[in-house]
Image (cartoon, rainbow, N blue to C red; front, side):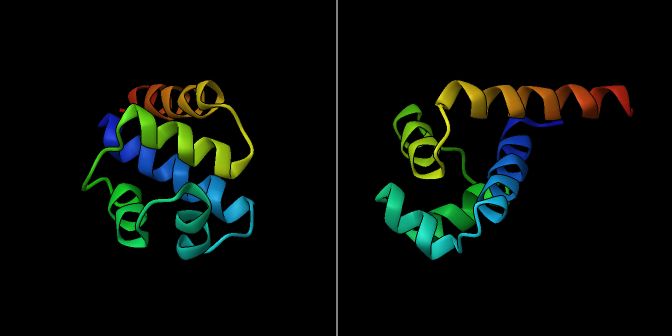
Length: 80
C-alpha cells in the first residue's frame, strides 16, 4: 500500500473517531479544509510540519500517528 494512501486512511479514521469534520480538523490544525480532503484521499502528502499539526489537533503524538500508518501499510502487504 502506498504510504500516502495509508496516511489518508489513518487520518480519516482518527478524524471520525474524534467526531470532527474536515473543516473542524483543518481549523484546529491551522490548515485548509481542502488540504485535509486531499490528504485523506491520498492525492497530496503532508509535510512533517503538517503531520505534527494534525496529530496535535487529534490529541495524539506524531509518532503514534505514523505507527498507525506503518501498521496499515504492513496489513496491506500481508493481504496481498
